[in-house]
Length: 571
Image (tube, rainbow, N blue to C red):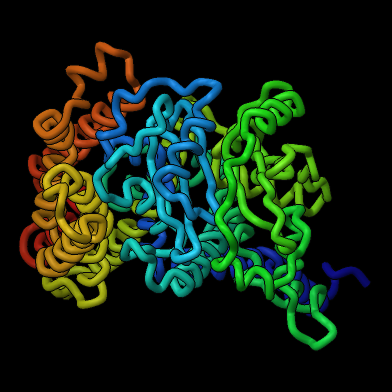
């Protein structure tokens, strides 16, 4: 009998078919909603810390340039020649006759000075010297962490020159990085129209729609970069976050983990006896080694490749050994090859360049993250990618506030006009971090020019200026979590960045009037970038000051609309 002749059968069949047709879409939507929830909260919980990590990491692409700008005493140094290393070594032995270990970094296009790290039998920590590449004369530069601070804060939340809580900071950064990686992956799942969103940006609509479009565009535009930089950041400290595999594979006979063997294998070194290493500080002084012969041998091996650094020490048997390392900008893979020489005869002893698949994969990921291979053009491109990533995080944080305010507004006239505590907290932290951190960075750079050169603990004083400014911006944001809070902090940041070239001209001889005509772009580029940053932040502050919040209607609904607009910076 057909279903037309039997209505009960037809109804049963239809009812039986309904779940089959609707189950799959509901499951798919439920999964996407779960991913949307995870995306939102993974990004929000440590979003402000992620913004700070990403922004300082972006600035670290120009770490060497920041180092130069913050030590103007390095300006005007002559170019290096074939005998630069020998002159520097002779000057080192003259200044420190009892040196037991030294590492010499040779000048390049980003750092014109010879940098020597040394220690002797009475000094357990390395000391640093900067030397003239022509004469070997020691250059007394001002005490500062320079761009090294941005680099160290990026992965260990450095709060002082001596790096207190560095290990704990790396753990916190690792957790934040993992949450960002989760947010990226869940964001891809959440966006059903990811390719359409790539071409969609409607700032004229304002409010939630504009911020959502901004978040989508900045998130999709260089998504492969975000995935690479986040995953490689986790991989760099895999020994900290995933120690179980190393503990299993490198367990000694006594059950203790021989981590030294793991690191030695990764770097291509031969494990040395730890007892001898512990007595390293009592070793006799190093002799003057024949650098010219060893450097010539290395250049021939690398077909005139650049030499980046040279290190002299005693091995486990007390023999003087010299390692000549190729410049790390000569290839993508990090940890460049090294040649090991007998420090007395200058004869080659070993060539170190691990070629295992795992080691090379790790080295490429490390090299991509550090970007030391990048030339000026690539570094500016990476800076742009990093700033887009910072905007992606910032727009996501602001979008959270916009969305909650819009939801409250849609409840109608019964919605309260006072901002809820949670929303007020997020809005205040947004102001204090998204606008306050750029202000703190500018104050840190300005303090380099304003603090007395002979001030004791000068480097830590610069960091104190940074964290004090940032803390005050957060307090201001929590007190004034509305349009005025954004406008004031952004305007101060604009003034601070724009003032940097002026302060530089007043206090040093490395200003644009000298560096631009001479074509010294490593110096002039920094002042121009500072001025451009000030102009951009000033334009944003002026836009927020000029734009008036729209009133949707009169009464409580209109008040809610004004509150929503002000809480989201009026955009």
